[in-house]
Image 1 (cartoon, rainbow, N blue to C red):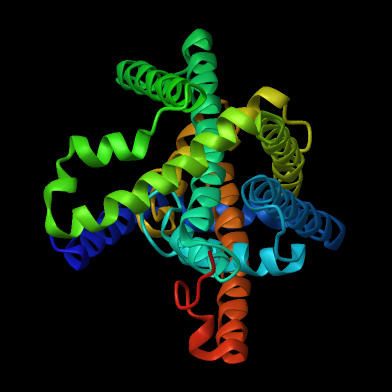
Image 2 (cartoon, helix red, strand yellow; image 1 turned 180 degrees about the horizontal axis):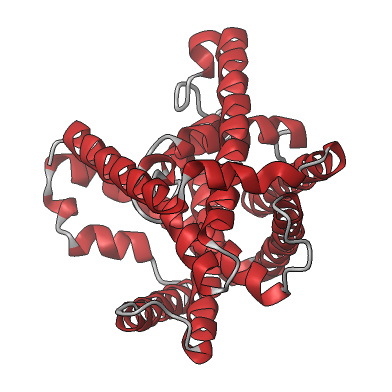
Length: 336
């Protein structure tokens, strides 16, 4: 399918989901839930959001140090991370679009294979954490018998698939298997003219990844701990969001479900999680008894945060390219 057509269709589906959700809940009612916002709460929310972003950059830096030794400055990595975040937000699919940009920008300091491997490791740690939390969240909903009618089977199947994929992935990584090379050959891509040129690069890319999991396990566990820290900060973040919306006494379990399903919304290949974020939050809030309008309020605040962070990222991109010119373009200048 043509990429533009696929993007257009995904946006139409997302927009339709958003419109249906707003019609059912009422957009004005959702805005009314934000009446309790104060400057103190908004400032606390901004501060905790920034701390989460810095923690994620720190995790990436730990991985880079394991792969490359010397690293760009922390603040330079922040700029790269924000640029990647912005591009990912406006492209469909698990916030993956910006990872190419991150790797390209980092490749100005090391080989493209090393740069790409750090982004791959960083993203897979993030996605496996999100997948694990989704499995736990689905189990909690199933045990509490509060899943929506008809969704039980889908949740069980999705959880089993995620569990198998996560288990297989880490079994391959810790045993030193070249997963990407295997997939490349399994799809017979190595037999194409372009594929023959890429085999060596993919093998080198895999070597960097497997070396990290086999020889740098301390760094791996450090990256996992930083991920757990970022999740702990997210509990604080959404606790503040719910305080803004007039629900300061929300339980840890409810916060867990809210965060889990926000992450799940961004896994659906629709730019900006348009519609899926709103529908998902309206549904989960209805299930836990806090009202669909509050869920829409959470989605709107989350979306506003992502837009502001994305604007910061695109601004950083503009200044970066103005300063570096063509040499600042991803993949333009690389080092071995």
